[in-house]
Length: 84
Image (cartoon, rainbow, N blue to C red):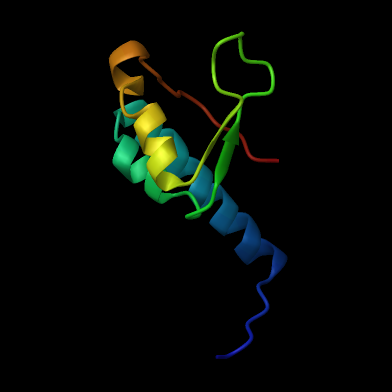
């Protein structure tokens, strides 16, 4: 395996692409594609969630189970993004 060092600009471009895809999939209601952006062991935490709700979801299967109905309850639209 070749060890590749990414330039700061390449890292920035990858991060921006991941964020654009995150917004696109959530606003489009494509939860399966959104979950695919996550690492297999990714963790979504809810540190300020109300009582009776989970504090975290871990792993793609758990994330999908939790988020699959998100588009039925929320309409998400993104109009503008600015990267700093």
